[in-house]
Amino acid sequence: MALPMIVVSAAQFQQLPYQRQQLYFNQYATYFNQRWHHNYSIELYCLGNFYCELWLEQESRQRHHYIALAADACLAAYSLAPHETDY
Image (tube, rainbow, N blue to C red; front, side):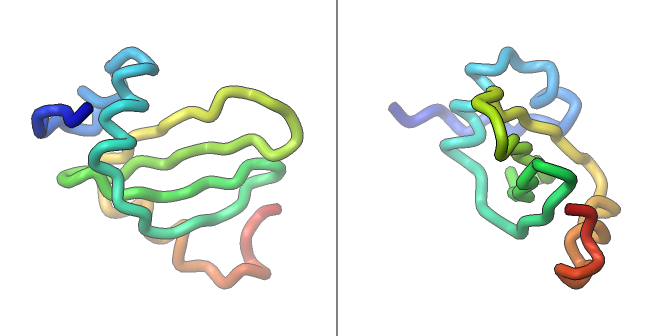
């Protein structure tokens, strides 16, 4: 089911119920990059006018979660060489 294009801000996206976040994300997210933090795989996506991190826990079946980021400052975390990331 296609959703109408709703241009939301990072703050508005973060306030959506989880299922609406998931629907919006699945419809509009464009993959950008990936990094690691401890046992989380963190994938960065562009959702139009903001970025969104998808946190995927690798050792248990926890529900993944979304963190919306309004600023381009988040891009710096994805520019590190693989050996410099915190796995």
